[in-house]
Amino acid sequence: MDEIYDFLSAYRAIIGAILLTMAFILSLKVWWEEVCLFVKSAWYSLPIIGKAARLSRKTRRADKGWFQSEIELCTDFYKNYREVRSHPQAYRKSASYLSKVNEIGRSPLSTGGWIAISVLVFIEALGFSYVLAGWTIPGASEATQMAGAFGISIVISILLVMLTHFTGHELYVRGMVSAVRSQWAAHRNAKNITSRAIRIDNNNEDDNEPHYVQTGNRLNVRADMRVRPPIVTILTIIMVVLVAAGAAYVRQQKLEQMLIEETTLSPTSGPSFGFPSLNKAPDVFSSPQKAAEHKAAEEVATTKRKGGLVTFGVLAVLFVFIQIVGVLLGFKTGFAGKESKKAWRISHNFTTEDEYIDYHRAKMDVVANVAQGHLSRLQARMDDRIVATGIEGDAMKMAGQAEDRNFNSFVVMKEKDDSRRHTSSVEEVPAAQAKTLPVDTTDERRSETREEMEARIRAELLQEHAQREETEDEMRARLRRELSVRPT
Image (cartoon, rainbow, N blue to C red; front, side, top):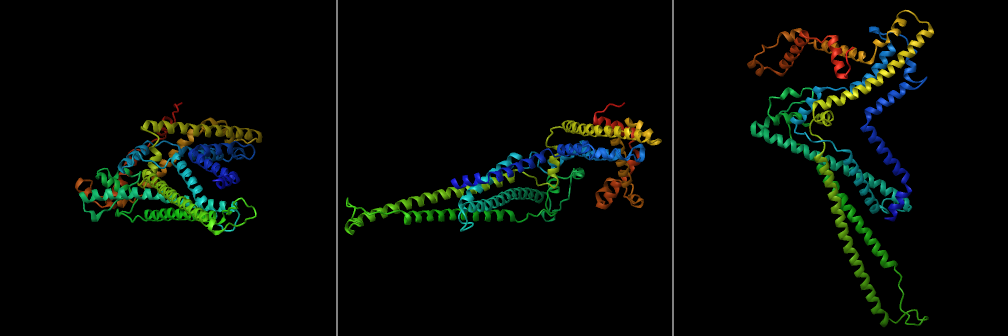
């Protein structure tokens, strides 16, 4: 234990740096959107070399009455705006997706779970390093041996954590597939199992199918739903048995080495019977004493050996149970669906659709306010530059009408362009294909092929867009409602 303490003391700076790096990475993962917005805002705010300062020197005009620099700034922040934008349909589809795949209530391994695993990995590494010290780099100094043993132990521990976690996930997926296959066999021909790739966007395609079919369509497995061999589980069992047996064997050899050293290196002194000049007692007097000492030494060694074996057995059992905990964590967390994790990210923080909308609306307001602040400052700089350089004509007129060009109006314009592009992509369906669609009757829909069904859906979308296209005023009103902006 003193060696481990000395090792931790000697490398405390490296260990502390590793822990701080892990905490920093975790913080970035949790607040990534806020960090990205903050970095972008800081980059725009820098004087001289900042992006806003460089854009203010450009007065080239773009289409639709905007300066090119204004378009570039708004496009930059529109990326952040789009990431936090609320989509009520996405929330409904995500909740329905998780329900159909039977994964409501599941979640990925939490931050606390990863911290617990990291602690277990560190403890395992300490135990392994103490066992492997002296055997990893023979002939090296004690500090080098401890460093090498600790490094190897970290690698072994990380491999075990990964294997046990993947084993738990593999067992969970196999259980899901087996359940679907058993229900399929009870209702249909089990030899002809074929699942479809259902994602969040087309989540409603199998609403009329039985629940076990809906679950099978969303599992991240092959279409034939065959249960794969548990390769990861087999590898994990082999790894755990080898490490547990190897660690117990090395501990036993270390104990035998210690007992041999105690026996051979222990000082022996014969009795002098009160005569200093008598170096060696006669055999008739010393033999019984030597026999008694030898017997006592053997009993001590036997006791230590038995105690060591029991201790090593307890440690091996404890090691195995730690791996079982890792398997259980992998079994209880994670998802088997193709897009279950994506659906969980969208819906897990909210119990109702209103909560989802309010949360994202607040985030949208934050991005819109930051973008508008930078846009207003850019327009003020450009106005000063146009006045100072004496640029006249349309540029001067546009600079005086900057209040009409705000971030919200850019969002409206962007939405309009995206809607037009989507409409044109739908209209690219060949007219001949739309004309040859089967008559929309119930009997014929039952017999239509997959290609005919897709063509019919495209034609219906074309008809919907032709009958009703959102006007610019309606789009402005809708975006104002989403952004909680009152119409002027």
